Each structure stands twice: as C-alpha cells, then as structure tokens.
Length: 186
Image (tube, rainbow, N blue to C red; front, side, top):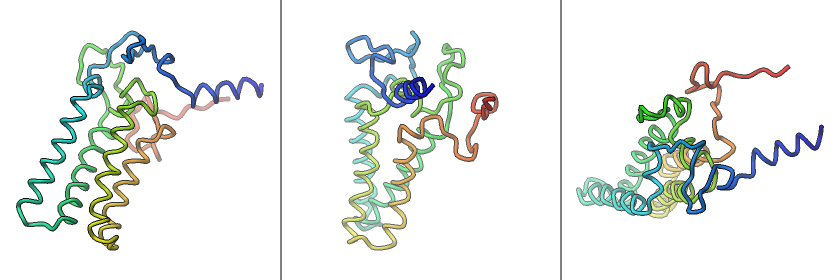
C-alpha cells in the first residue's frame, strides 16, 4: 500500500512533456485535443509583444508626467496584476465552441501547456510579475507604502501560479458546481 501511495505521489508531482503527449517538437497535446485558447501563448513572438506592450503602457504612464517613476511603475504593477489575475486565474473555460466543454472547469493558467508545471511559457509568465514588482521598490528605496502596494500583488500572482495550486479553490471561491465539488472517499 505504501508503494502505491508513493507512486501516486511521484506521478502527481513529476511531470514531463511525454506525460502530456509531446510530439517531440515541443507541441503539447492534451488527449488528442488542441487547446486553441492557450496555444498562441507558446509562440516566442507573443512573449516579445507582451513585453513591448507592457513597456509601452509604462511609457505612456510615465510620459504623462502625472506620476513619478515609482508611482508609474506601481500603477503599471497594480493594473497588470488585476488584469492578469482576472484573465489567467479567475475566468474559466474556453471560447472555442468545438472543445465540447473540455476546458470549462479550468482557468487559463490551468489550461496552459496542458497543465504541466515549469514549462518555458509558465516560467516566462512567472517572471513578469517579479520584474514589475522590483522597479517601484528599488526606486522608492523600499518605502513602506510601495512595499504595501506592490508586494501583496506579487505574492498573490506568484502563489496562484505555483504547481501546488493547480485546480485548488481556496474556501471554494471560484469553484464550479459539479466540477470542483469536494470528493469524499470512503
């Protein structure tokens, strides 16, 4: 019995692309069904566009001269944090009508790379909040206001992205009835 429990634990926390149906070229396939909701994010050009878009938003905020450097980077971090939390970790499902509800109970983050942790795409998306959190803290010399605003956003976003939080609904918040119901084992 202990050997079976150890094997289940090992399978639960050790993933490889082969487990998800890697075709040898880095294309992940979940049960023969391609997830059009997330496949676009695996393109490196999308990553470059994402970085450029965030940089342009920061430049617009900073060039208005309404905000100091620390304030403009804090505003960017807060807006980025709220938008990405909403779209990556809150909204569930896929707008692709041909998936027949396969992804209805999963957030965008849970659908990404067929749920595998520590893929290059997920590492990139985990790096972005860290890089957005640092400039306002450094520019303000770790002023308590900027720490109190930026650090919680960083911690919430990074915690939501951890593999141990995959399909976890804390206190059943954002749970989908019939999909995320607590299972009782007798």
